[in-house]
Length: 176
Image 1 (cartoon, rainbow, N blue to C red):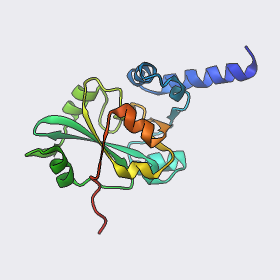
Image 2: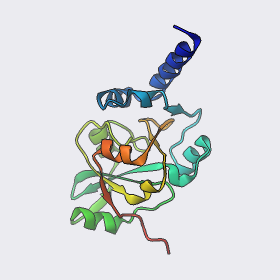
Image 3: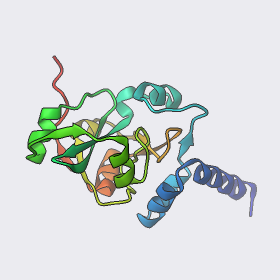
């Protein structure tokens, strides 16, 4: 093994230790092992879009926000760019739901296996409907949670949407 191989192995090992183990396993199951080495761990929490963008050195719109809702009691994950606000009424109509509410921490953990503020776009405990706002497609690379409030990973939006099993929608709150 040469020094380059050793460094690559050390980087992948460090990233493996950084990301949530369930998420690392999900990446492997999806054939995305190369993503493990790209996981970044922050020294401080990066729960907010602003914190994550500042730590990465990217625009807030390049952060993939994961918002969790209950549509008539059924969990749904909405992914959109970090500079956007979700239109609750747009989501409700898209789902054909009577009632849409923000999901509580218990439902988030029970459905995904991850805590609020740390939900990745895929690798969840249960099958969850995923809506993806088209705003994510405006970038070559977006950054999403790697299963903890301290970790993110980069991915091109089309791959992220495909691996999340997401449906492209327009649920971004219109800018006034």
